[in-house]
Length: 133
Image 1 (cartoon, rainbow, N blue to C red):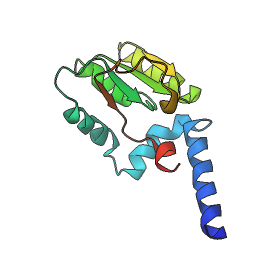
Image 2: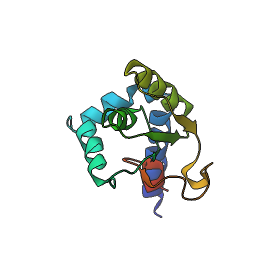
Image 3: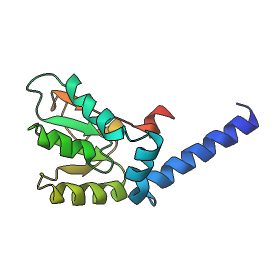
Image 4: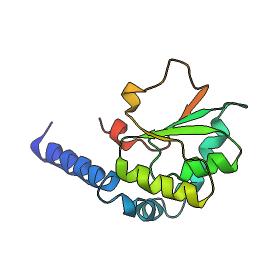
């Protein structure tokens, strides 16, 4: 890779690391800005791709909990994982405010702590760390 391109990607990855960790409290606002206000609608659109009666659903990279809240509102039982403790704290707070169950686990998508085929469906709406890997 060219030195400038390599430096650019390192900077992008550093920015995402900050956004998912120390700056997680800005994530929802950043998402609204970069999606021109469509981020939550895009996330909810993913629900249409779940097979009927697919519960429990596993969400990979739950972020601030918006999709978990939408799954609960749709009556879909779910559990979610994320590697960031910062995101998990925000998501738990958001779910408690919505009176939704808090089923969040800190884990890596590459090393799921569940038996094979424990979930009939999995969903992930923006796993940047995996896209950029």
